[in-house]
Image 1 (cartoon, rainbow, N blue to C red):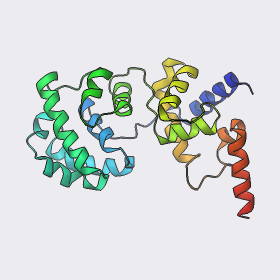
Image 2 (cartoon, rainbow, N blue to C red):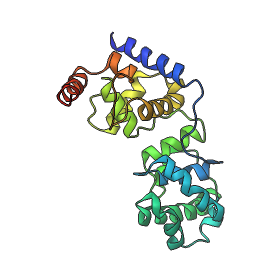
Image 3 (cartoon, rainbow, N blue to C red):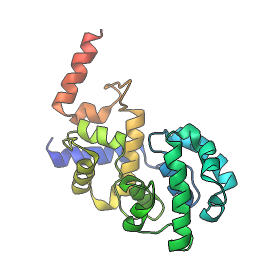
Image 4 (spheres, rainbow, N blue to C red):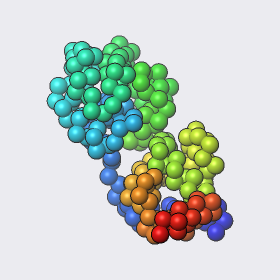
Length: 221
């Protein structure tokens, strides 16, 4: 298969597997999504979805959030990890949303990335999932799979995002990045990977990745 055929194969296979795409993080509006995505850094979505109801019961908008102290926020979100940084970020960005944006989450990469503890990936998730703006947030699953599928050189997530945006049509970015995440979790994980179940990598995988898998698999028999 040439590159375009591989891209088409990825798109069609994912569409077949995930005709409807569940959103990984529970939220009800742009603000609760922003907080959930911020909490998901180095934390599983499952854990975040267990913690956000506890936090949002006390504060699900910036006005209520700034009534909590950084310490109170930190105590609630501790199980998500990095709680000192994340609690300061949540408190700080809530103040900025009130002072600069009328309490609303801005629909702009520039303004979002100015908020404390909000990086490009978090901004991309909010722009795509809250506002429907085409974006391609690259998490560890997407970075791993794009490399396994020989669609990027895997140098870093910035390069992976550039490559993804170049080869996939813009109108499907918002669905596709979620489909790849679900596929990575279910069929092509970092650990406990079974190539037999991973139809995409098995069909179009990078030669060195398939050879490495084969070596490891054969030596463990």
